[in-house]
Length: 123
Image (cartoon, rainbow, N blue to C red; front, side, top):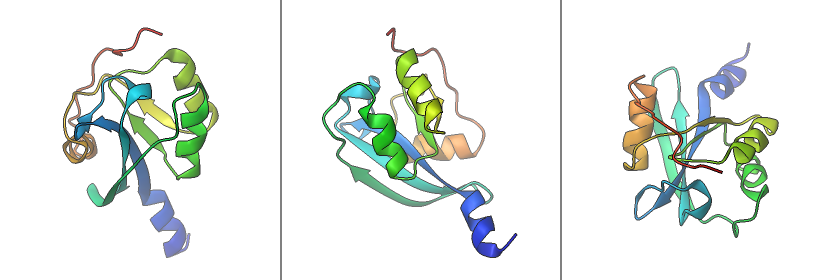
């Protein structure tokens, strides 16, 4: 495997829906997404940016995030149908995360210490 191929396998993009600078507990109603490029081998955040999502409509966000190279979504709550659509796009979903700043959530995830709980969405 070339070093370029290795870099691709160790770098992933994590998306976190945010409102007011913290994880938004309802995925489809966030103000922005924090997109964080992370090195999974060295367990560090390489880059972080915030982007405004398109208007919320069923099925739009999974394709939109896929187009931005997202590999994992960490959310407070997300409906089962949305999770299924993310899976169809090859994006893993972790639900039940706490309302914290995106960088803190991701670093805790990379350290293997993210405590995630119940899916906070019931649809």
